[in-house]
Length: 294
Image 1 (cartoon, rainbow, N blue to C red):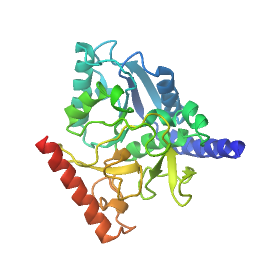
Image 2 (cartoon, rainbow, N blue to C red):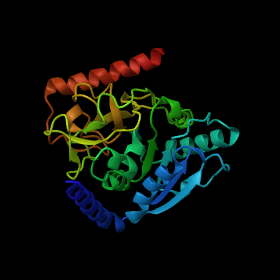
Image 3 (cartoon, rainbow, N blue to C red):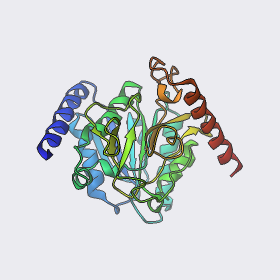
């Protein structure tokens, strides 16, 4: 069983790597701090390099950088439990925010359990390798002209990265729910980020899951202050829970949630039930209204 899982992950990774090599991007993988699961983060960066991308790794507490315009994509990784708001870090957060706000294509992925895709965590949970999952972030951003990935975990480690969320006008990472309610997150099969190679969920083999056995944090969904719609990609519970319990969200949209047919979104070729789409948009608007009042 274990060998089958490893082989499936290896094959899917090789296929995706081959498809990406012809469209390599300049990617910055930025650690918020020199502490906080650095080896795990470097492992995620290595997945991107293995897909043929030119990856630069740096630490945002080392120096102030002003070369962000050299990159097609930026991955920010925050697993630091420190108070990561030094003058140097804040300057880099502002520069990354300015880079994103000036992009012609403002594509965004929020991942509140990104460390769970590293091999140490998938192995611990007896799940297939998720190299292809991380590589598909880069692939989908590349197809849409670049963009930003913000990856972190529960609310003990988000003080730095949430400064970038604020700078670009999206809701904060939040929550400290442990492995709530399980060590897996259900993936929307209509999302552009979905992959056939992912594992079946243990709670329901009809669904597909990604690993989520780090201490879970949740991500923003719905209409954001910057005018963007963040659609659930992976979540806990059913798709009716997705807007409130999303582990991953993105601007890429999905027919499942009625966010499709727009720029850089999939066509609405897989119709969601009308009531579900309206429910999702209603929840999104309600969430935005609550954040505005807060």
